[in-house]
Length: 307
Image (cartoon, rainbow, N blue to C red; front, top):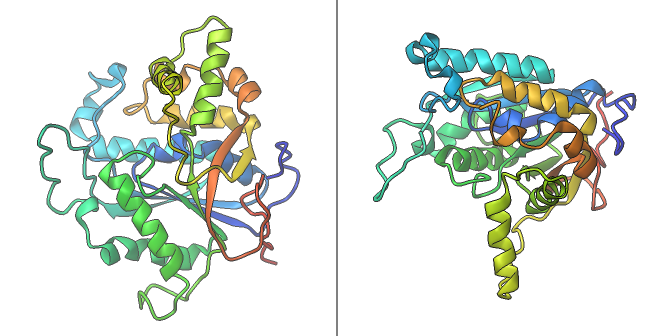
């Protein structure tokens, strides 16, 4: 997708794979990017590692829904299908069990058999098979911290890195298809601090309440005391101008009714303000097997489409 949201520039013959931990993660991280590339002709696949079985119902309006109480996994599968349709992406479940987010002091043990406790090769095998089947040019997932330290996000990071490397080696993971070498591996930076700052100050300037106020105040206090926040381990290298697809992102989020409060954090900033203040989605290029000058405005920069 070109820098100025011109989906008329064809991306046919190019393929993107996004690896996510739970249903709804694809809609909060990189959704507008994916919708934009689909509109430009690329094939986009979302791999969801778990079914989100241990997620809580986070939307108060759904608390009395008998379907959610009776069959939350089934409802989340339906929500995922609706979100995928909104974004125009293909979707694959990897079939692992949600690990849940442990809380308490000390933290409880993770459930036996859950995704985060799987041996790496067992957890990565279905993703390696998908990479060899779908043959993506680009793979996106999370950083070593999982974007935030949820055990399933951290494991999703681990299997994405493993699959990027191993799928290219014909001697590894026998029986999962012909080797395929993806060209690039990116980490998503949906919660880029620069973006949060820009949106926070835009809200304040407009006289609106900012959901980022407490976090920004902590950063400003650190600045005043001379304690600069540490530089990100993986700085932004690539910004995709996808403002025209923010509506798709919002509707995909809303499809996950059990997980997303329509009055909550994700909708505190209007689409119009986001388009004006921060019209990009941000990524960090981690590994590239092709030459591409940084900074980039296209995840497929340097890649030749299949004929």
